[in-house]
Image (cartoon, rainbow, N blue to C red; front, side, top):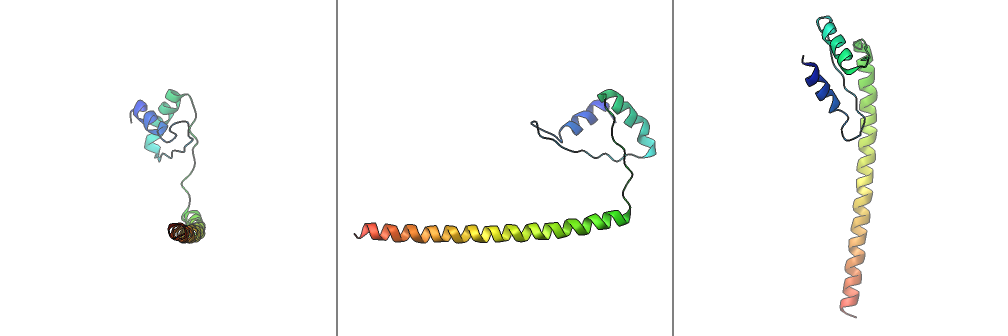
Length: 102
């Protein structure tokens, strides 16, 4: 892989001053390229092992649970917003009728 291309693409994960995280999957065949990229950018790239199937399953279950909770909160929030918008509309119509015929 071209070092400049890799550096450019990874840099796009944190745009406009925002942080970001890039994950690169590398095999033992890629180790030398990885070391060359580290030398090119002047920083060490953290290495981690691929998670086990049990770890993935555990994180998946926790993520799905959190997603369900988030979705319920969002639906509840939208319902409240819709109700308050409906109430404002009724008040505006009532006020307009009162002023028109007063």
